[in-house]
Amino acid sequence: MEILLFIGVTVVTFLLMEMVTWLTHKYVMHGFLWYLHKDHHQPKYQHVFEKNDTFFVIFAIPSITLFYLGVTPNLNYLFFIGLGIFFYGLAYFLIHDILIHQRIKWFKRTNISYFKGLRKAHKIHHKYLDKEDGECFGMLLVPKKYFK
Image (cartoon, rainbow, N blue to C red; front, side):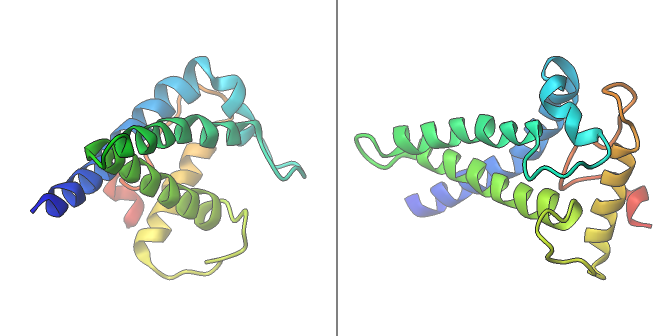
């Protein structure tokens, strides 16, 4: 029964990360840490990494910390919260960096309507080159209008 609780904690954490991502993207990345996110909204240049990639490290720290605290001294729920954050980060990498921005050339021509909607919403987000007036700050949940 304990394993079902741990699976539930992981799934709920993954789902809550969408809200955390939206809030962080809108108020931190488009707020006081804009200087790290700004290059992500500029026309592409020929660098492998962006300053924006710093956020992968920033968001990995809580997950790694929770992994450590979740196995010390015994396996506990903190490990599974860290696991939910990790799975969301993995999904973010696969969807944002690979599917949407094509940093690795996979899924170039997908006909899955959900993926097309995500791409469309993100394209609308990137039409704004400054930190103000943005929209579509989430990653997995975007308004229905982008799926039409």
